[in-house]
Length: 196
Image 1 (cartoon, helix red, strand yellow):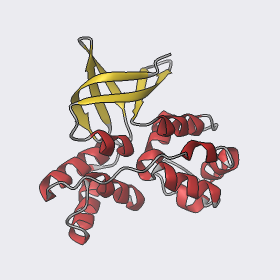
Image 2 (cartoon, rainbow, N blue to C red):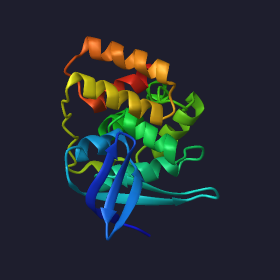
Image 3 (cartoon, rainbow, N blue to C red):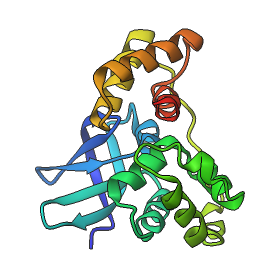
């Protein structure tokens, strides 16, 4: 129904973006992949997927058509909803996910919060062979380095927004920043998702 939304980036957090166009601010749920691509921009164009549920109407936004198509492939699998698909895309880049599915590594895929081994295996079985056409010339994003305190604040806030307890998020983010002080927000959250 809606192909994309283009306009002023009014607000940005690791889990959502507000894009203002025509006097209306649209809240789009985003992955860390998209967050890293649009961070620092004032104008954005996000490809959308609109979900209508009994209790909500949600926009999911993606910086590339490839990521949106991958999201759509994921939610086509029974038992995988929009938030789980977004969590998968936040934990692994599209290329990493393609590699996991190609190598049938269900154990690695089940590291995503809320994803059990059976669902991970189902994703691999149903999407095996469907992803090769998605990656024609799409390069992954470059991580954006941010100052230490800002990285801690944003990464912790992102994890809390994604449903993790504040105390656990705090502990994991601190440990990662101690190991790698120059890490980006996106990579901090990605590594945290693998450890929580």
